[in-house]
Image 1: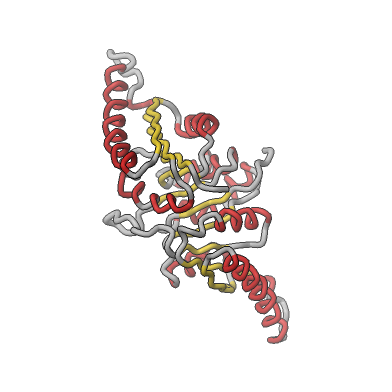
Image 2: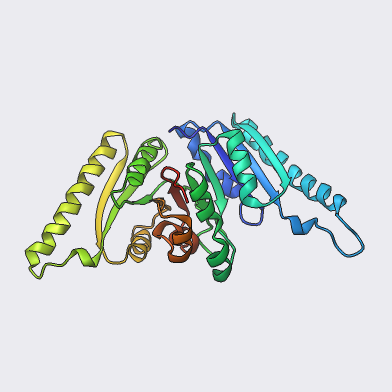
Length: 294
């Protein structure tokens, strides 16, 4: 899939033009259209005692968003990009789904969830809900340090963690389409400790060699596509080891296939991709699998 259109979902405090600017290297992966979406929370314009619906507040907030988008659009027009924009009073997920259906983007960019642990437990995170409802890749953008400096080259050194699932295979094809953007990619697989049951050292090393061979073959496949790739085998808890590897290799982002668990199970148990997207400091590109029935 070529990345021709991005849906950039922003509340401005999380994702501003500097974040958008870090994505523009995707023009090398055929990007030619950016669609902005600003969803105004209903409680900002809802009925208040003695005032009713704050229509003037709605108009003001929409125009404030429009002014920002016009400024951004002028820069993008100069780069030869098409631009569209939506400013709506709505709930976030339904509005994203509506715009996705209308615009058919190839990538959705959102900020990470600000819901608390208990709120996510009962209502789920935006990331979980989007993965459950759509098959469009999602980039959960994050500023990697406290002063919110944006990574200058977001695709320069990604880390791709594969569990050899069908979703992982889909992620590989998506990565190939970014061959003109990616500088060097680190490919890793985490072997769970339970898989190392043999008391024989040779048995343990055999597991490592089998996984390393699979990784070498995948790296050769990416090399043939024009992407410099390096393989790594880790052992332990997948979530901890993926974050460890991202730090060790100074990854610019983490690429993951998303969970195929049913929504209720994922809400209570969680998934590696969802937890890393929610909790790690790294921007995360999530590649959803096919839709599942819940």
